[in-house]
Image: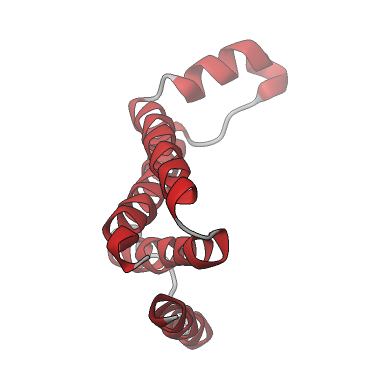
Length: 122
């Protein structure tokens, strides 16, 4: 199973990248009014935002690689690795988006990392 860790980590990184692109895109869009703009135009504006569109495409790549992983390894081994995407997203959000990273979040991130190490060793 350890032979698939690079592909699993690719899945994790593309998943995290997709989340970050979606955040960037939606922050750029800002507030929108479905009642005033209409749902059709709102959806078009969201989907065709370059960052949102890239994020959605990256999710497709992430899901494709995850499907490959699931065809090769046990889900109880592969799925917990996806929690590492939270670690990547939290760090990026702290440094780039200037979001809070409290002691409780840092402790949680540490537990995620330790838990993933235990799973990788199994």
